[in-house]
Length: 111
Figure 1 (cartoon, rainbow, N blue to C red):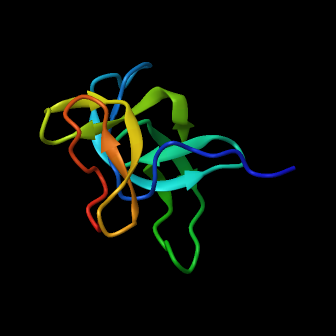
Figure 2 (cartoon, rainbow, N blue to C red):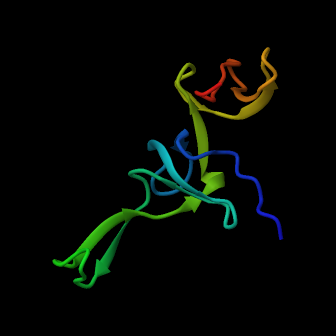
């Protein structure tokens, strides 16, 4: 089975729109297309108990980000200053870029 497409990429600034962390903004750390999930920094923090090991000799309780469903986040447009839907557009140089549906600004920083 092919991996489904996810509407966000690693490094995108997103805002959580539903769930316990609704309204929080953060960058995407990891995208898991097979499960349609994303990991956003400082969102959905969980506590994990770890035994002492060579990498962590102290052990203890570690707080880390857990994945959330990709449908619960929207790309944040810095120009509109709000979460927006994204579209695609071909630029003058022939590159395909993601654009803000509200203001038409290019969301891809490298384009």
